[in-house]
Length: 70
Image (cartoon, rainbow, N blue to C red; front, side, top):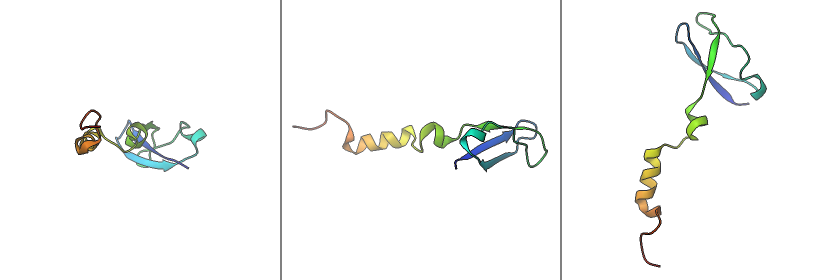
């Protein structure tokens, strides 16, 4: 099961929970204040763990097209 990140808009508490995909948007309450928390989009879901700077470093190692003979 995937882990989802949540943030409480009332107190700002951030926490994670392992939940089934079909439960990810069901109400979840903050462990600190008890108010309803909202699911956040994690970095993994957005970028797959890669960043633009790391992609740039791969290109700088000679992975770009048009450099060299052939």
